[in-house]
Image 1 (cartoon, one colour):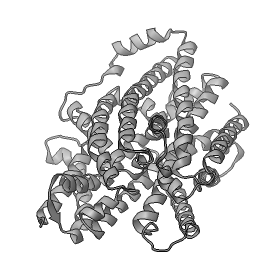
Image 2: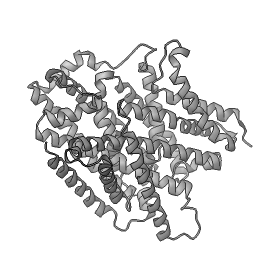
Image 3: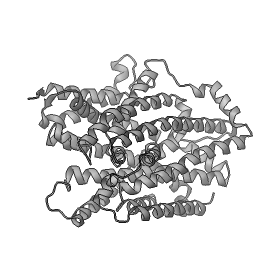
Image 4: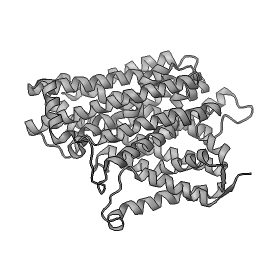
Length: 482
């Protein structure tokens, strides 16, 4: 594919997003931006959240990951399903009962000022790092296949990408994202299905025959029974549960979309529907990964990173139409995670730190101006972070994402668990120190786990350990609630 064609596809797709934006931003105000005026249809939210949950990370890294981890990721996905039920039945009722705009306001009511700021601060760190990684993945593909051919620097590519996202989220916020995510989820899923078909046709092997070959091979191995292994199936399953609870239920970006539904019942219907579909979609991505692996083996395709497997085959081996499908899918996967992160971080900064919802007498014009300033500032942080990640390409991006989550979402898990399941009063002033110390301990335990624990290697369960240490720390420095 020529760089010009790739660029045209990107621009046409972006124009389509702006058409949706125009319809959704008319008469939009701060409440539209933060919670969509609580009028979002639950089925639209559920469908759109698929794209937001998967993102460019899943679109590229999960298929490439099959080479090293087979189908073991599916055990984590099954854990996700149970985690979503916990969110629907425990966390959503809490958020709706307290009528929250930012979910971290709960920490202010339960603990106090410092705990509140700590929780919101950890979210900002987590989402900034995660969103930057996701955006980097897509921007890097565009750089390799488009902008390098024209000798355009990586930073200009990044800047253009971010400007597009700023423009279509600046006014409408969550009201716009609910509908753009729906459009993008459709294109992303269509791209996966069509890519599987193109690979099957190119190899002249019927689809069902390829699926049969995969199921009979070691590629389809799902359960790893060696307890020393970092992907031991039991800890994979429980890690999936708590990854979902933290990265969705305790994440402002994902919950902000749920809170835009009309009421709790519709938000729960959204969560149940979304979780069921997501299991099937993740399985589809793993099947795509297995197809790509078989194709690479038969054609002698070699890549330096597993993240490069999908784009290399789609753009160089399957023909122009397959390349177009891949690019549309990649862009469709990238925008939902980027726009949602930018909107949720703007909400957290505006509500949790600038407190624009509690300033007496503040006009809508002033509130909008403050929100715009926060929006642009976060975009600048994204820009800097992506440039930094440009130098960190030695591991699968999804692995990095979950490693980061293990350190930054763990304290949130501990804070919410202690608040929900105990009636004790923690020392609010010590919460920041406990929340910082827990990830530090986890880092050293993970680094030296082989020596300390008879060959045991930490995987995603590091998140659970992190949350547990935070919980214990809060309990030690607490007293009975009066």
